[in-house]
Image (cartoon, rainbow, N blue to C red; front, side):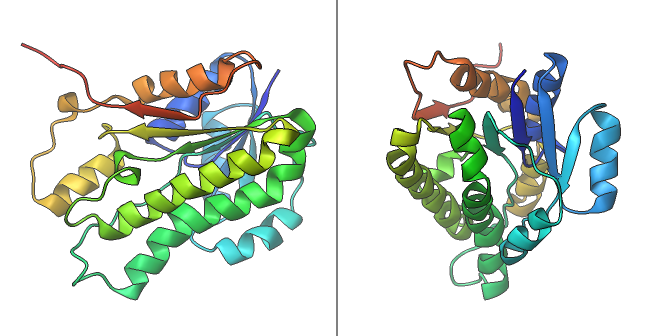
Length: 232
Protein backbone atom coordinates (compact mmCIF):
# COMPACT_ATOMS: atom_id res chain seq x y z
CA UNK A 1 0.00 0.00 0.00
CA UNK A 2 1.46 3.33 -1.08
CA UNK A 3 1.36 6.49 1.03
CA UNK A 4 0.47 9.82 -0.60
CA UNK A 5 0.49 13.39 0.72
CA UNK A 6 -1.89 15.58 -1.29
CA UNK A 7 -2.60 19.31 -1.30
CA UNK A 8 -5.80 20.68 -2.80
CA UNK A 9 -7.83 17.52 -2.20
CA UNK A 10 -11.00 19.44 -1.36
CA UNK A 11 -12.04 20.02 -4.97
CA UNK A 12 -11.14 19.67 -8.64
CA UNK A 13 -8.07 17.68 -9.62
CA UNK A 14 -7.00 17.16 -6.02
CA UNK A 15 -10.34 15.65 -5.04
CA UNK A 16 -10.35 13.43 -8.14
CA UNK A 17 -6.86 12.01 -7.48
CA UNK A 18 -7.62 11.53 -3.78
CA UNK A 19 -10.77 9.61 -4.68
CA UNK A 20 -8.95 7.34 -7.16
CA UNK A 21 -6.13 6.59 -4.73
CA UNK A 22 -8.60 6.05 -1.88
CA UNK A 23 -10.61 3.61 -3.98
CA UNK A 24 -7.57 1.47 -4.63
CA UNK A 25 -6.76 1.27 -0.94
CA UNK A 26 -3.73 3.57 -0.70
CA UNK A 27 -2.95 5.56 2.44
CA UNK A 28 -3.81 9.26 2.16
CA UNK A 29 -2.47 12.20 4.11
CA UNK A 30 -4.52 15.23 3.07
CA UNK A 31 -3.25 18.75 3.67
CA UNK A 32 -5.98 21.11 4.95
CA UNK A 33 -5.81 24.82 5.63
CA UNK A 34 -7.52 24.57 9.04
CA UNK A 35 -9.06 22.10 11.49
CA UNK A 36 -12.56 22.51 10.07
CA UNK A 37 -11.40 21.66 6.58
CA UNK A 38 -9.41 18.72 7.93
CA UNK A 39 -12.52 17.30 9.61
CA UNK A 40 -14.47 17.68 6.37
CA UNK A 41 -11.81 15.85 4.34
CA UNK A 42 -11.53 13.05 6.91
CA UNK A 43 -15.28 12.53 6.63
CA UNK A 44 -15.17 12.50 2.85
CA UNK A 45 -12.31 9.97 2.71
CA UNK A 46 -12.76 7.47 5.56
CA UNK A 47 -9.45 6.27 6.93
CA UNK A 48 -7.47 9.17 5.51
CA UNK A 49 -5.14 11.15 7.76
CA UNK A 50 -4.98 14.94 7.67
CA UNK A 51 -2.29 17.56 8.12
CA UNK A 52 -3.34 21.09 9.03
CA UNK A 53 -1.11 23.54 7.19
CA UNK A 54 -2.07 26.87 5.64
CA UNK A 55 -0.33 27.22 2.27
CA UNK A 56 -1.01 30.96 2.35
CA UNK A 57 1.67 31.15 5.05
CA UNK A 58 4.74 29.15 3.95
CA UNK A 59 6.79 30.59 6.81
CA UNK A 60 4.53 28.73 9.26
CA UNK A 61 4.61 25.33 7.56
CA UNK A 62 7.65 24.09 9.48
CA UNK A 63 6.05 25.04 12.79
CA UNK A 64 2.69 23.52 11.80
CA UNK A 65 4.09 20.18 10.68
CA UNK A 66 6.46 20.10 13.65
CA UNK A 67 3.42 19.86 15.95
CA UNK A 68 1.77 16.98 14.10
CA UNK A 69 2.50 13.32 13.41
CA UNK A 70 3.95 12.71 9.95
CA UNK A 71 4.20 9.52 7.89
CA UNK A 72 7.48 7.60 8.25
CA UNK A 73 7.71 7.21 4.48
CA UNK A 74 6.03 8.95 1.56
CA UNK A 75 5.59 7.33 -1.84
CA UNK A 76 4.24 10.46 -3.47
CA UNK A 77 3.85 14.13 -2.66
CA UNK A 78 1.20 15.65 -4.92
CA UNK A 79 1.20 19.44 -5.17
CA UNK A 80 -2.23 20.32 -6.57
CA UNK A 81 -3.49 23.31 -4.57
CA UNK A 82 -3.29 26.69 -6.27
CA UNK A 83 -4.83 30.13 -6.68
CA UNK A 84 -5.44 32.24 -9.78
CA UNK A 85 -6.06 35.98 -9.56
CA UNK A 86 -5.97 37.66 -12.96
CA UNK A 87 -5.02 41.24 -13.79
CA UNK A 88 -2.73 43.31 -15.97
CA UNK A 89 0.75 44.00 -14.60
CA UNK A 90 -0.15 47.66 -14.26
CA UNK A 91 -3.03 46.77 -11.93
CA UNK A 92 -1.64 43.94 -9.79
CA UNK A 93 -0.84 44.86 -6.18
CA UNK A 94 1.90 43.38 -3.98
CA UNK A 95 -0.84 41.62 -2.00
CA UNK A 96 -1.90 39.67 -5.11
CA UNK A 97 1.69 38.92 -6.09
CA UNK A 98 2.63 37.77 -2.60
CA UNK A 99 -0.37 35.48 -2.15
CA UNK A 100 -0.03 33.98 -5.63
CA UNK A 101 3.66 33.24 -5.19
CA UNK A 102 3.16 31.99 -1.63
CA UNK A 103 0.50 29.42 -2.49
CA UNK A 104 1.66 28.40 -5.96
CA UNK A 105 5.44 28.39 -5.51
CA UNK A 106 6.88 29.02 -2.05
CA UNK A 107 4.55 26.64 -0.20
CA UNK A 108 5.28 23.72 -2.58
CA UNK A 109 9.01 24.40 -2.20
CA UNK A 110 8.81 24.48 1.58
CA UNK A 111 6.51 21.47 1.88
CA UNK A 112 8.86 19.51 -0.37
CA UNK A 113 11.85 20.52 1.74
CA UNK A 114 10.15 19.44 4.95
CA UNK A 115 9.09 16.05 3.57
CA UNK A 116 12.22 15.18 1.57
CA UNK A 117 13.59 12.83 4.26
CA UNK A 118 10.48 10.61 4.00
CA UNK A 119 10.55 10.80 0.20
CA UNK A 120 14.17 9.70 0.13
CA UNK A 121 13.46 6.74 2.41
CA UNK A 122 10.87 5.39 -0.03
CA UNK A 123 12.52 6.70 -3.21
CA UNK A 124 9.24 8.50 -3.69
CA UNK A 125 7.72 10.72 -6.34
CA UNK A 126 6.99 14.45 -6.29
CA UNK A 127 4.29 15.60 -8.71
CA UNK A 128 3.71 19.27 -9.42
CA UNK A 129 0.39 20.01 -11.12
CA UNK A 130 1.53 23.06 -13.03
CA UNK A 131 -0.42 24.71 -15.89
CA UNK A 132 -0.12 25.70 -19.50
CA UNK A 133 0.71 29.09 -17.96
CA UNK A 134 3.91 27.51 -16.68
CA UNK A 135 5.11 27.30 -20.28
CA UNK A 136 3.84 30.59 -21.67
CA UNK A 137 2.44 33.85 -20.28
CA UNK A 138 -0.62 35.57 -21.73
CA UNK A 139 -2.00 39.07 -21.08
CA UNK A 140 -3.70 39.34 -17.71
CA UNK A 141 -2.01 36.20 -16.37
CA UNK A 142 1.28 37.76 -15.22
CA UNK A 143 1.26 36.80 -11.52
CA UNK A 144 -0.17 33.34 -12.09
CA UNK A 145 2.19 32.58 -14.98
CA UNK A 146 5.19 33.84 -13.02
CA UNK A 147 4.33 31.52 -10.16
CA UNK A 148 3.92 28.57 -12.52
CA UNK A 149 7.11 29.34 -14.46
CA UNK A 150 8.81 29.34 -11.07
CA UNK A 151 7.18 26.01 -10.23
CA UNK A 152 8.68 24.52 -13.39
CA UNK A 153 12.12 25.75 -12.34
CA UNK A 154 11.58 24.29 -8.87
CA UNK A 155 10.66 20.90 -10.33
CA UNK A 156 13.58 20.88 -12.77
CA UNK A 157 16.10 21.75 -10.06
CA UNK A 158 14.62 19.24 -7.62
CA UNK A 159 14.76 16.48 -10.23
CA UNK A 160 18.45 17.08 -10.87
CA UNK A 161 19.29 17.34 -7.19
CA UNK A 162 17.37 14.28 -6.02
CA UNK A 163 18.11 11.89 -8.88
CA UNK A 164 20.88 10.16 -6.90
CA UNK A 165 18.41 9.61 -4.04
CA UNK A 166 15.98 7.84 -6.37
CA UNK A 167 13.30 10.52 -6.00
CA UNK A 168 11.28 11.00 -9.20
CA UNK A 169 9.86 14.40 -10.14
CA UNK A 170 7.07 15.04 -12.63
CA UNK A 171 5.46 18.27 -13.80
CA UNK A 172 1.97 18.08 -15.32
CA UNK A 173 0.84 21.00 -17.48
CA UNK A 174 -2.95 20.86 -17.98
CA UNK A 175 -4.84 23.26 -20.18
CA UNK A 176 -8.09 24.60 -18.78
CA UNK A 177 -9.80 22.11 -16.47
CA UNK A 178 -13.48 22.06 -15.50
CA UNK A 179 -13.08 22.99 -11.83
CA UNK A 180 -14.31 25.60 -9.38
CA UNK A 181 -11.15 27.58 -10.09
CA UNK A 182 -12.09 27.68 -13.77
CA UNK A 183 -15.50 29.12 -12.83
CA UNK A 184 -13.72 31.91 -10.96
CA UNK A 185 -11.33 32.50 -13.85
CA UNK A 186 -14.22 32.86 -16.30
CA UNK A 187 -15.89 35.34 -13.96
CA UNK A 188 -12.69 37.40 -13.88
CA UNK A 189 -12.49 37.24 -17.66
CA UNK A 190 -16.15 38.19 -18.03
CA UNK A 191 -16.84 35.06 -20.06
CA UNK A 192 -19.59 32.44 -19.94
CA UNK A 193 -18.40 29.19 -18.38
CA UNK A 194 -19.06 26.02 -20.37
CA UNK A 195 -17.55 23.04 -18.50
CA UNK A 196 -17.98 20.70 -21.45
CA UNK A 197 -15.34 22.64 -23.40
CA UNK A 198 -12.59 21.87 -20.90
CA UNK A 199 -10.66 18.88 -19.56
CA UNK A 200 -12.32 16.94 -16.76
CA UNK A 201 -10.42 16.57 -13.46
CA UNK A 202 -10.67 12.80 -13.93
CA UNK A 203 -8.72 13.00 -17.20
CA UNK A 204 -5.90 14.92 -15.52
CA UNK A 205 -5.99 12.35 -12.71
CA UNK A 206 -5.40 9.59 -15.25
CA UNK A 207 -2.24 11.34 -16.45
CA UNK A 208 -0.99 11.70 -12.88
CA UNK A 209 -1.59 8.02 -12.21
CA UNK A 210 0.28 7.16 -15.39
CA UNK A 211 3.34 8.92 -14.00
CA UNK A 212 2.95 7.43 -10.51
CA UNK A 213 2.46 3.86 -11.73
CA UNK A 214 5.30 3.86 -14.23
CA UNK A 215 7.87 1.10 -13.50
CA UNK A 216 10.99 2.22 -11.65
CA UNK A 217 13.21 1.94 -14.73
CA UNK A 218 11.56 5.02 -16.24
CA UNK A 219 10.46 8.51 -15.22
CA UNK A 220 8.08 10.97 -16.84
CA UNK A 221 9.56 14.42 -16.41
CA UNK A 222 6.87 16.54 -18.11
CA UNK A 223 3.30 15.85 -19.22
CA UNK A 224 1.31 18.39 -21.24
CA UNK A 225 -2.46 17.84 -21.34
CA UNK A 226 -4.78 19.83 -23.59
CA UNK A 227 -8.57 19.86 -24.13
CA UNK A 228 -9.58 17.37 -26.81
CA UNK A 229 -12.33 17.50 -29.41
CA UNK A 230 -15.60 17.58 -27.48
CA UNK A 231 -18.35 17.17 -29.98
CA UNK A 232 -20.45 17.53 -32.99
